[in-house]
Amino acid sequence: MSEPVSEPASEPESEPESAEFAAAAPRIVVYSRAGCHLCEVAEAEVAAIAAQTAVTWVRRDIDGDAHLEAEYAERIPVIVVDGQEHGYFRVDRERLLAALDGRRIY
Image 1 (tube, helix red, strand yellow):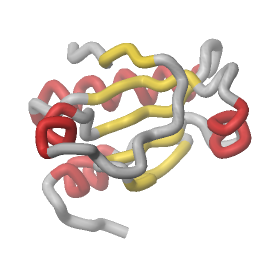
Image 2: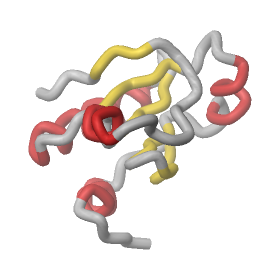
Image 3: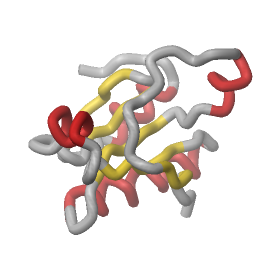
Image 4: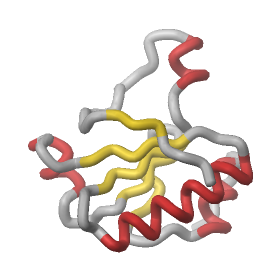
């Protein structure tokens, strides 16, 4: 199973500083917190999809970051794809695969 890149809680970068940064940035971010069962399920689903599609993903803990807590606390887990909020609570596999492929499914 694909393991997330560990990162401390922080606000996502607004714009990549270089093409190298953009290439290295994870495609999927899962905003999460410890003890959240839905988060654990979403992380497992994202890990499987990331492994299948060879994309990078990261888990960002919102606890201890006032900005992230204010933004996401009521909706975790929140899934972000390529810097855009994709969804929350549950992972829709087909919709996430479409987003990674550059397509939108509503």
